[in-house]
Image: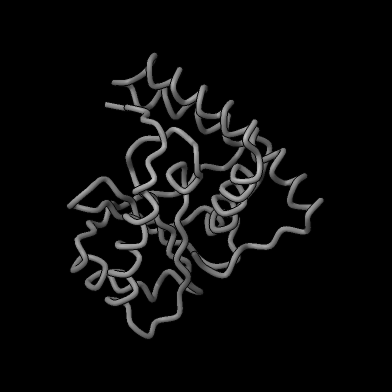
Amino acid sequence: MIEIVEHCEEWRSEYQRLATSIRNRLGDAEFLLHHIGSTAVPGLAAKDVIDIQLSLKDLSVVSEKAIETIGFEFIPNRADHCPPGMTLSASDLQKRFYKYSSRPANLHIREIGRFNQRYPLLCRDFLRSSPEAVRAYAEIKRELANRFSDDQSSYYAIKDPTFDLIMVAAEAWALEIEWEAPPED
């Protein structure tokens, strides 16, 4: 069931707790961690799911065993969608995806420099800078959840292209302010 709730200040601390567990388990490996998705945007209504992006140079070096000992379960055959009108290689959309067992949380592992690694960071930062976009996007998500609470396919069939529209504005904003992906949260 899809349920959109008002922004919760505790989401930030829940992200920090999970990020600390990941950092402790992965030790000296080179990676970046970011709080992504709607729960990472102050004031944005969202599903109560913490999304974390772990970025590294090569997906093949992921220690699945280390990730699983934290409580994340690997979900096979997941890739990000390609926005309409774009032609992207499979590697630009490839990721490793995990669900957390103790609370609703997702871990998206992506390669640094790929389209899908930049996309959620840019969108998050753009939304953080635009209260008007936050209000409009929240309303769209509420309406979609009301209409498709038990139909994830329909919910995402509309939500994903809506997010792609937000990205048009985000890309213009990024050029205007010379945005660069932040080093880490």
